[in-house]
Amino acid sequence: MNSIFKQLLNVKGMVVENVCIVDGPMRPEPVLEVRVRPRAGMLRCSRCGRKRRGYDRGGGVRRWRHQDFGCWRVELVAMMPRVDCPKCGVVVASVPWAEPGSRFTRDFEAECAWLMTVANQKTVSGFLHVAWRTAGQIARRVAGRLRA
Image 1 (cartoon, rainbow, N blue to C red):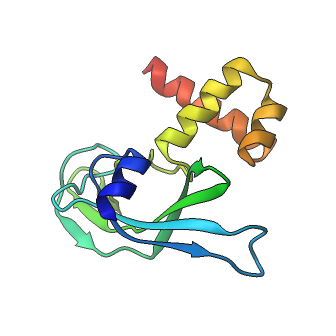
Image 2 (cartoon, rainbow, N blue to C red):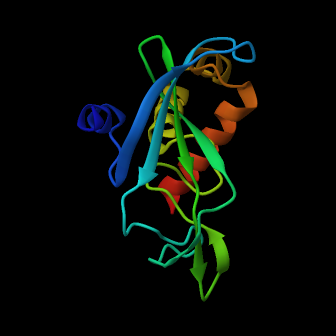
Image 3 (cartoon, rainbow, N blue to C red):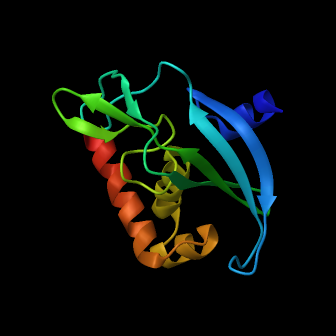
């Protein structure tokens, strides 16, 4: 099961721990929740990118929206450990599937930015089920990464 979801998610440096469908009164639709963690030895500072030792297990769980699987909305869920970086201090470790501070995976952001090249912002936001402003912010972030 782990290898199938790793291939479907197309993310390197990740271990799939659990997959379940989450439904409840606070969610408008069921979500395919994939619990993941970075591979051992992959802890890096989210600011400078250097490999660092773990400091602690962090303050809780974070979620990232991934590309949908058919009609299922997909979210990656992970505990976020912190690292002790001599240069940056104690910071949250980076993850291989998302940029620091983003609530979306790199694949989702790339899909959104590509769609913005062939459709308007309102259409893209409706297609991906994100806010209009969020679609624009994602496109600007991806464009900035490509320029750098």
